Image 1 (tube, rainbow, N blue to C red):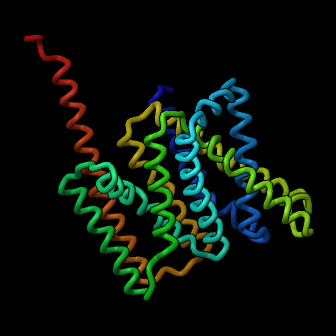
Image 2 (cartoon, rainbow, N blue to C red; image 1 turned 120 degrees about the vertical axis):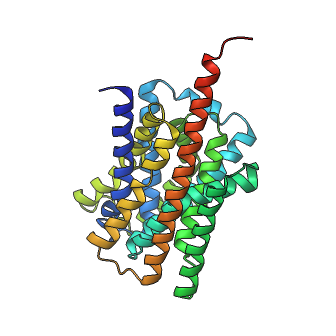
Image 3 (tube, rainbow, N blue to C red; image 1 turned 90 degrees about the vertical axis):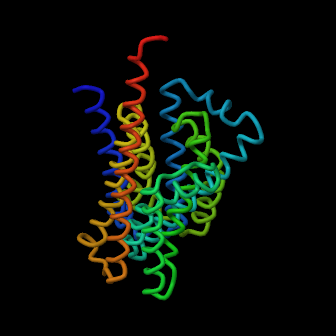
Length: 304
């Protein structure tokens, strides 16, 4: 198996874990979302710190948090991912996985829009068309339902901001995520201590629940490690297309496994978003192909 095939399998594994994770969180409906989020944060810290220790890279944490500015950036990233994790858990528990799926479909287009506004990146006509279609999808959903799809929007915005911050960090993904949970773990540990002091904590009540809660660290760490491995082996355009496996599997969980109702406004929104993503992916693929051809041409041109 060559590097590209290994990368594709790693990306498939990462997106499958992310996409099917609602099934895992449904199994923990009896655990309050705040407690579940605290456990996810705490056990993620345990797993990530363990991985870095095995790799002999724990010292990299100190470098990643060497300046107040670096800590501030990591703290903002930690806040964004914590909000994202928490809202995702709540959405699964209240039966709104359809909206989480829509949020993660919207996220790539949100990220592109932030790139234009904050980084002054330039878009092609097709990419602007994709963003326009996504905007129409959200507007018609808001008008049809009488309220904005807040879950989808908040998930898309927080994850896009998180990705924007991560793009500007020089540390690797595992080190940076470990640094983020280092900042979050005191709050998680404090909340768990408070919950258990009041006799309401779920950890330790039965082996099944305790095992699932501890497994949340693996559920968080494994797909990120797989994604990092994939990013080293396949092109960014391939990664971009394959990331849609995640919300597609979430959509499958919502509609087929959990039997969530799908209004006509949701159906229209998903159709418009899928069309927008198809247009955007095609445009990105065409730009990526043009860059590769240009690089190949310049590499074979004889020196003047």
